[in-house]
Image 1: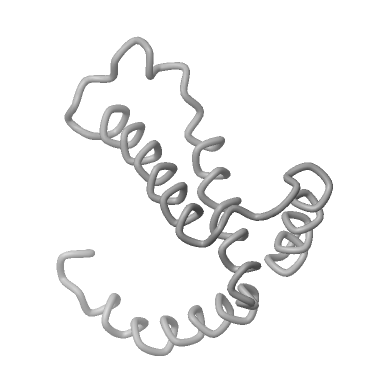
Image 2: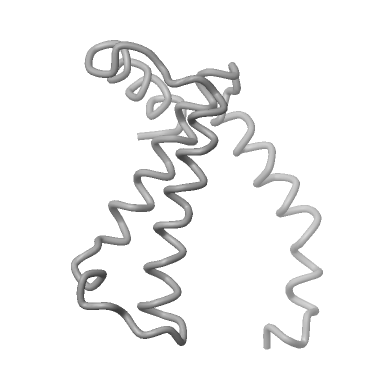
Length: 108
């Protein structure tokens, strides 16, 4: 599924199951909350903090999917074509960063 199809799938889900979109500010707060949950898993599972027993069952993929879902909601609400924006960003980063990363001694 590409991003355009994902945006449509989220829009259809909202219309069928969600009644309506939460407002943009609420979705921004939800996005922050979901990113925090991802950060907690990463910090405890891959970082230096110890993982609490209650966190060991948490699914990183599920939490990342929550982030993507809310991002897609925000894109729909603000009329952003995320597929185009992503393609444009990838082209910009490719042009801007190719030589920079290959010549970065810290990455070798």
